[in-house]
Image (tube, rainbow, N blue to C red):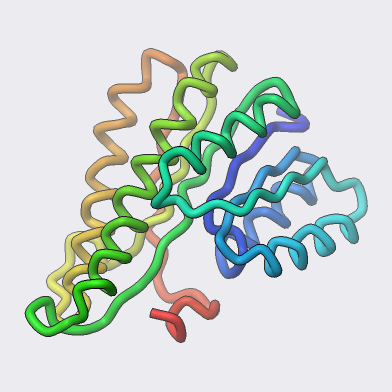
Amino acid sequence: MANRVVLITGASSGVGYALALAFARRGDHVCVTARRVDRLAELEQAVKALPGHGEFLAIAADVTDRAAVQSAVDQAVARWGRLDVVVANAGVGQRGSIADSNWDDLETLLRTNIDGVLHTIRAGVPALRAAGGGQIVIISSVVAGMIAPYAAAYSASKTFVSNLAPSMRLELEVDNIGVTDVQLGRVATEFSERR
């Protein structure tokens, strides 16, 4: 399908940034969200430098804010009339023991990696249904389901979303919406430095 409309969360760096460029390069219309507005401006310039790029819309939004994610979906649909692909990519890492880690760090991880994915899916599904179907991509990790001392909270958050994906696939099959769980290994991004 040419000129798909794609929404990608967490696109200010790493995998989300690279995915935005890849979709734009093939002529898709790309709506991205992230908290770091300056990085979204850099991404916009990178997209504009691509030959044959699709249209681009950058929205400052935190996936922990359900209303902000819904607004991003609404803006993409208002601009292009539909939504074809939703990539739930936004995520954070965390290292430390469950008993001793700072609660704010744990809460940020859980709100981003679990709630953020749920907010993204729940905002995107009605738009995908209205378009007659589409694709949801959940970016998870190879640590999903692994016993991971000092990374247990991160592993548990990725286990949640990786278990969610096959259930959602069955639930949404009737709507012609596919769900893909991508379990990434270590990727050369700033993610490891920031966790």
